[in-house]
Amino acid sequence: MTEEQSRRKRDAGQSDCLSFTINIWRQQGLNDKGHMVSYPLKRVRPEMSFLEMLDVLNGELERKGEELPISFDSDCREGICGMCGLVINGVAHGPGHGTTTCQLYMRSFADGATITIEPWRAAAFPVIKDLVVDRSAFDRIIQAGGYASVNSGSAPDANSMLVSQELASEAFDAAACIGCGACVASCKNASAMLFVSAKVKHLNILPQGQPERHKRTAAMVEAMQQEGFGNCTNEYECEAVCPKEIAVEHISFLNREYLKAKVAGK
Image (cartoon, rainbow, N blue to C red; front, top):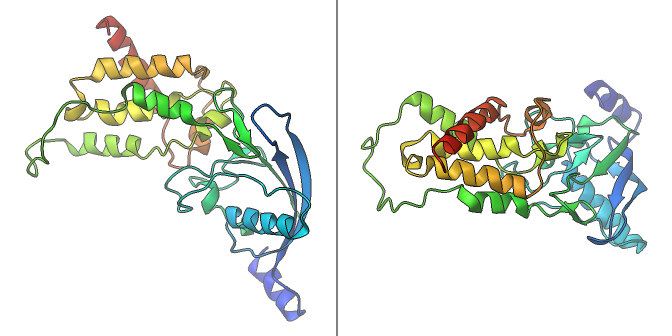
């Protein structure tokens, strides 16, 4: 709704609230067969976040006593944790660019629109209930090597370990990945290469990550394969929906690192 439309509604004594038809995936359990359910929803303020809209919908369902509330993940609601992953109108995290679902606002949708909401779709992310998926596969990949195990002692003095500005910037860019899984949900192969490449790169290019560089790379890639994620075929959907705008160039880095690790016999 534009500001001019809002002004006209106020002049006519009408509310600025929006109305939507919400098509949402309902699934009661891991082994149940899910289905889409449609709900009409009125009195949605334009400044509401997408998750606040779902809170309002759950409130109406509870008051009517018709169905159990819709289950969905959330935590910080500040675009940091990545828990809020939803596929909205076929796009991971919805129509916003470089943002998470919790930072998407209802003014992004036209009044009277139909909004379709689904969970991440990937065999490695089984649906637990409604919009909640099990993303523990990412945790197991991190456990395979996404850390530096050397005893580094206390914090070093400033500038005692020199890192170039270029490397520091690259590491920070990769470390921005919040592990939300949008890259997997958007990829036709359900590939986790963007996630793994970001986690590998931010450690592999820094001095602290050098001792376990080859071992880390091989272990994390092989853990990814064991979890059942697909391969990258350079479709670039992952980069397009990543809320932290992680670049696909990291995947090229990961491929090179994995080849080096195999040559080194790790």
